[in-house]
Length: 402
Ligand SMILES: C[S@@+](CC[C@H](N)C(=O)[O-])C[C@H]1O[C@@H](n2cnc3c(N)ncnc32)[C@H](O)[C@@H]1O
Image (tube, rainbow, N blue to C red):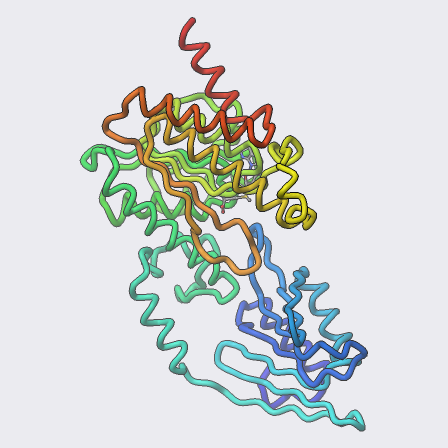
């Protein structure tokens, strides 16, 4: 729709829906709030991807706090319509290339002003930043996966995924440099819970295209449909050595693995993945744990902590810290130098912690027993009876003894 043809709220909603379809929506700001909630000042709405699904993220900006809610596109548009016909009297829509302002007067009179925008200083800055990215935005797999459009420009709604891919490759590239992987030999990678394959394609492309390594990369995914979809995509591109299998991390047959990846594998799936990496003697283990259900109900915290832990969010944070600390310590005990850090500051998701473990050249038994003693002390302190990774590691040593 040409901007000059915008005369009614219905036109505005049509433009909004079209901008979601062609991914040109950057932001919608609703202001001049006249509703009952005296502390609400404005509402900012942006498209983003959560768990591989596109959503509209609503940030309600109150005087002293912000409240975030995510909705599917259709539901989100309906909410916007209802808010604009009642409580909010102004809307400012920012699209790629245009800005549209809607003002509703006290008497209900509508005024719509539009103007086209050229690339501004911000987008120029973004463009400059893009030049420093680890993944070349022109790579064909990004278009196939819906990160870039046919002209190989970033689709705004995928900008967070794009940042995540780049950060992931940056961390991986640095880990590979210092790892024991023989750079002249093909690197074998397994990605558990590969989902839609964003990171699997990216690591394959990085190894094959940027590092000229004859890497073999396998995505292991529980859902057959996603494994098939990724194989079809790989087949349309020139991605030799990349394949996806339908499988469960809990039962996946071991094979030679230099790099084990598990990003956002739920709960104990992360423990199975780490155990796989340790058994395979992987040079690099990268995981970003998701939820932490196993440890939380087992934890008995000291009475001193009770006033702090009456707040549910702290309980969750404590369970997460203890679960992931134990994972990191087990990796240390089994001969890995391990780091735990914020992977990328993904707005509106807490799944941004990474455990990165790089196999040491040498490891002494004394170090291992000392770390295992520390683990036992932590478990005792919190009254933890079972940690999945510990159970799996113990089962393996029993099998190795037989
Ligand atoms: C949140 S998605 C993450 C996808 C991808 N790793 C990423 O970070 O973009 C988690 C994926 O793990 C898969 N999954 C869950 N449990 C699994 C298991 N036991 N074995 C293999 N895949 C699993 C799910 O089907 C889902 O596609």
